[in-house]
Amino acid sequence: MKKFTIGDRKIGDNEPCYIIAEVSCNHNGDFNEARKIIEAAGAAGADAVKLQTYTANTMTRDLNISLDGTMWAGMDLHGLYEKAHTPWDWYKDLKQVADDNGMQIFSSPFDETAVDFLMEQDVPALKVASFEVVDTKLLEYVAKTGKPIIVSNGMTDFLEMKESVDVLRSAGAKDVAVLHCNSGYPAALNEVNLKTIPVIEEMFGCVSGLSDHTLFADDKNQIEPVAHIAPVEAVRFGAKIIELHLMMDRDEARALFEKDEGGYDWAFSREPEELKKLISMIRHYEKTGEVTYDTDREKELALLTHGQVCFSPTPKELASRDLRPSLWVVEGIKAGEKFSFCGGRKGNFDSIRPNSGGLHIRYADIIEGKTAVNDIAAGTPLSWGMIDFKKS
Image 1: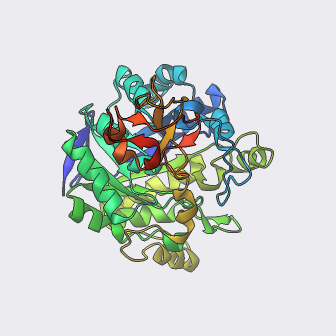
Image 2: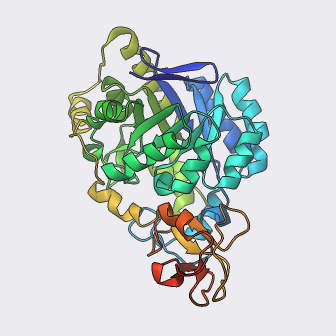
């Protein structure tokens, strides 16, 4: 098994599982709520907390994109990120909260400017979210930082995941961990396929783990929380990193969600006592090799999570694939004008969500410096017919 360090924490091999509590948007725009979540993570025994670093305009543009087919159906993509993002100026103070509670803190960047910002904060590691696995430009930029990289494989097929790992390593990343992930929101227990975890370790020669979005025994009706089962079973399959979302009060968050006032991750986020329970069970297993469930029902649900080795999107993930980033024209381009990639900075085409006909980001370097065949309006998915390859 591979092994590396995040700060002074050893990850992999025979070390204890590294448990990350994701704050995400569960702060609902309130710094004090973010502080409470971090404090609760520390009290529950988490090793680290994680943020997400983006703005609505670095994630997408105001393109009137509806999130149909997901738990956020009917919401506007740009509007959701406006409400859900974590203000960047919170980071320094939240880091102090994490330090005071004995945890590391890092983040998922979603564009190059976010990477630059996080490097200024001297984060001990960087996380690449499942949706950004296809953003090869971002992967290259992240790899060049020299930081340990944790990447999730949600929604990917095998070739996409292999490309992402290859890009990271060829760009200089030495310490890479791959987390098995189901990006159904919330994920169904019978689609988690935890048997994939040890195969990831073998196939990619890396530390493996789980980024978990399960919560309910019945993901459709969203009742009967069983927050501990998938993470505990993942550790039994060799997971050395567990990442999961944490919130303070699910009922309150669900009520906010129903009013479109917050709680956007309520359906796959743990409460503090649930996090404490699953961490206690994981640590007990690490010491004794034993897992004890309270009921036969829990034992049956635990078996559901095992599934099969799976390197393709599950049915529930297919709708989410449409929300991955692709190449878009983000500033109007005149015929004969050169294409210039933004990476969140000045330029005229960029990798933004969604994947609505835009070219794959792997082609960005080929397009860079080529000229436009005709005028292209901002907010247009980039296609081959717009690019003049005869001129440069």
